[in-house]
Length: 286
Image (cartoon, rainbow, N blue to C red; front, side, top):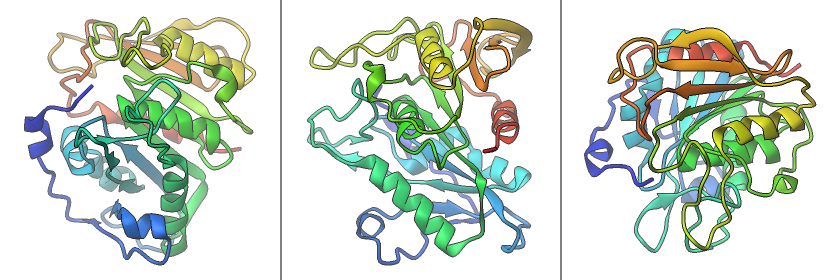
């Protein structure tokens, strides 16, 4: 699950990205985040907000260099915030996601409170559309957004996880409102297994990609079975053709996108984020 050092070294230069004034919240003072304002935005019209959470051992800047979501922010007009996880004893940045990942040294770090503080800080300084607040995470960050969909369900409209999973113990998901959920996962992932597994012997097993989707379908009160939509997407440039199978539940805001033959770190195509943003845009809060 550790991000490669080469990937971390690739830092994106985003003209509209900056560290905002920390304000008075001690969580933000201790760990400032980066906020990208979309090009051409008037600063007055309420805009959607996307939070991004990096993988274990990565950084906010390293993952932005990989995902390139600032360019999508400019094209689609949403505010985009991303931050660093906390350094652990192994000198790796992490998020305290679900019960299955990834506070490896059991520090009890409260990253739900930190994410909530970012939401508060952005909204205090810029007009945010409260019905269009979203989160995206990869690997450890994917576990984190599943956690946030549970604990901040009244604030988040939708989340998308790349190679993450839900709680091992579904009863720990303290959801209070429907959240749209997209799980994207390579079925050849050797780090966070598509079929489920463990990040270490001291952790409970994390659910499979299918069980992750099923858990959210249950939370959201969906009926029927997960089934292919017939749509195929081209998300991984290293795999020929449209390799990603889209499955969904009937009349339900839960989808599973399987990158067939996809690894833990897909070679994302230039347009990979367009269908992800389309999923977000199609699922505002009621």
